[in-house]
Image (cartoon, rainbow, N blue to C red; front, top):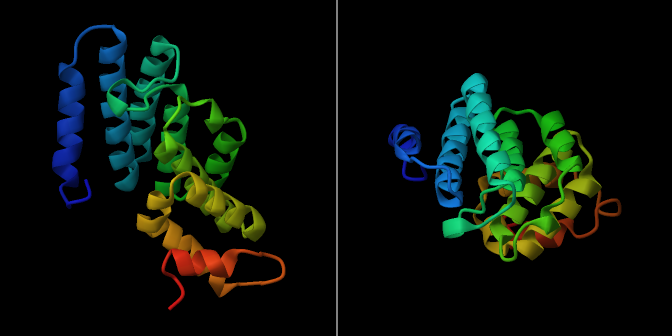
Length: 189
């Protein structure tokens, strides 16, 4: 996906998910993970209906799995499906859905070591709060994402854009920590 092969990635994800047979934990995990990849691609193409259908499919598989897991480092389970719903809502420019989903999610309940998924939750939450001009909440989520998954924040275009937007309306006394964060993500020159 990151090498401009989005169409190939989507086709491969959908076709591969259709090939996985069985109802064991591994098979549910692989079909679900591939459905999540395909859902995010559909959301980035701004095909909300297809993204929603693929997320529903992944959610059904996660319910059947019955727990958050990490088979094959997939992080697949109900919590990860909700995080992907949040990411799809970001791609579809829907901050209210991101905030509503985030309110009911406890990412600390995920299996140990899933820092990237937890960081993505905070990054998506930061984006949504930023869109609603809730600067203090935005920075709190960005700092938490940085604490949990610093590599995510350092490579994310979304994080840089959110920080740029915050800097554009900076209120130093109301949002402590912003300037330091901006320097660490490469927004300050």
